[in-house]
Structures are given as C-alpha cells and as structure tokens.
Length: 90
Image 1 (cartoon, one colour):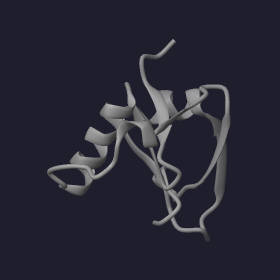
Image 2 (cartoon, one colour):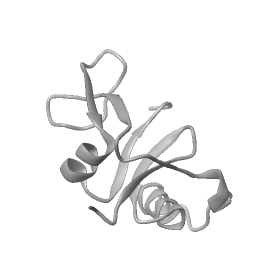
Image 3 (cartoon, one colour):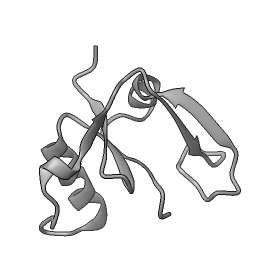
Image 4 (spheres, one colour):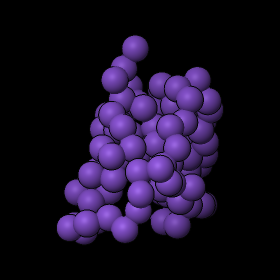
C-alpha cells in the first residue's frame, strides 16, 4: 500500500502523503508562498474510488474536449506519483 493518497479541495486533486502535503504540492505548482486554505478543507479520496480525468496524448490532465480516462485513485497514484493530478478549473 502506498503512503500517498489523492486529496481534493473540490476544485483541485493532488497526490500527496497528507492534506498538509497536498497544500505544499499546490504551493510548489503555483509558486504561492502561503495557502489561504485550512488542511481541513482537503478530503482524502479513498484509494479504491474511481476518478475520471480528461487526459491528453502525453498523459497530462487536459481540457474537457480530451478523452476521458477512468482509473482508481490507487492506479492514478502508481502512474503519476506525488503532485498535481487534475482540476475542475483548468
């Protein structure tokens, strides 16, 4: 079992070790120095839950016109590793 899990704030999904680590990954991606969120706003998504993401030909999250790929969170974790997974905004 992986030490990583999928965490979501209902807009963005990150693969991280904890909600605090998800916030750190978000800061790393965006360059923000601080997060205005509380770790309690992040929910750990069960590893066995399916997550459908629009993916481009390079395996990156993409716009809504890209094909949808559905995998369990555990499969996304194994494939993508720690960091940004997807967003409802971009």
